Image (tube, protein in one colour):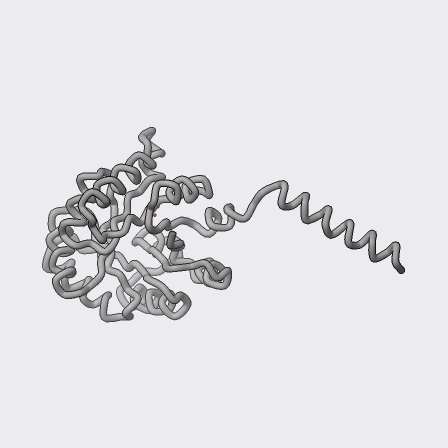
Length: 221
Ligand code: G3P
């Protein structure tokens, strides 16, 4: 399973990269705004800064919603760095744009996926990734994980190469459940990734090991 971090915060991206388990980064306009990044050139510079930190894919989202401008924006983003994956919303012009990008060898991440039908359409258009937002589905009382399971079944039935990028991950349990269901990638906050580290028996076990080591050393001295 690939691990992406869902942030535009350079410190957090560096921390995840230093951990040695990071396969990529996803961003969106809200995450860029959260870091105070605005204006075309600043956004471009920020994507370049992210690409300089990580080895893997970096999703950069278009803000246009009509075919022509999605293409213009997406082509400019793709030229920034070979790591860039153009993130396109699941709208009619977005599907057309994904088909176009796919024919030009530009990789795409179809975002804002909330149904298996949307994922199927994006895969047919040739999306590299589809991003089902499981946390936001959970938030409105529906089963986000069921969507991951359904998309996995559909893609496997037809052998689609499109990767399932489980997005809107809220914590470690989401990651574990997505891994059980065969999501290819998960993207979540640093806290969700670091949450996988934690177990009280690990902490108490380590404390005992270190105390026993110290006692034995003191007894010998
Ligand atoms: O980047 C897309 C997605 O992961 C957003 O997550 O937490 O805003 O629902 P969230």
